[in-house]
Length: 227
Image 1 (cartoon, one colour):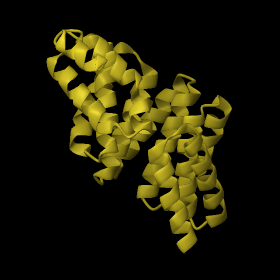
Image 2 (image 1 turned 60 degrees about the vertical axis):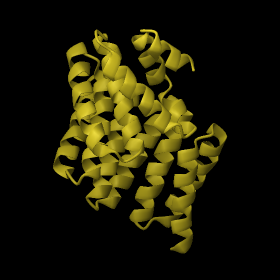
Image 3 (image 1 turned 120 degrees about the vertical axis):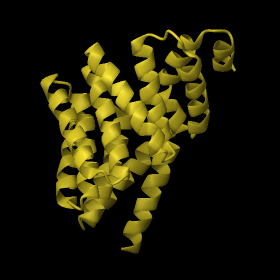
Image 4 (image 1 turned 90 degrees about the vertical axis):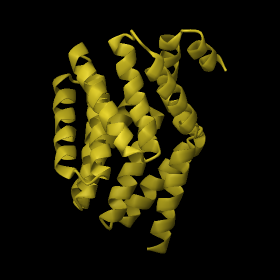
């Protein structure tokens, strides 16, 4: 109600800042459609937005579109957000936009472009000495390797990403990486590592109330049980 009030009363920038800041909330509680509605309205009505707010809103909109497999909507939003982040000199969010772009492109079988985006992301993150951004880039490259059928490489990259995220102590990032590692290990035939990682993912996701990751971990653990 508060966000709708802001949008109806000319406080579009305030609304978009709030929606972008709540990115983790929308996913955790399954309110992706609501976030997309608010972002779409705000971006359409937001004449004169600051570059920072517009870029963050575009990145958030793409992130939510990805959650609904709407890759055609995600790619142009990410490309625009990336251009603005680079213009602003915001390396961390440029890395995040490149990672999301790589995921969208992989889902559309554009694996060479996805690989380049992931490698660019890692180069920027390492140049900025940003471990959180580097962990995202490694996680993304693991995903691209998985799409290429390089499951051993995917597992190794996932392990590097998870190590960084454990050192950062961010429980949501750790949960995401245990899922990525579990899937990579499962596809590499290392079912013991896969089951261990996905069980940890499930426990963490339940503790955080992350419904999507709970479902993902349960599906993968079911596949392992079948194997």
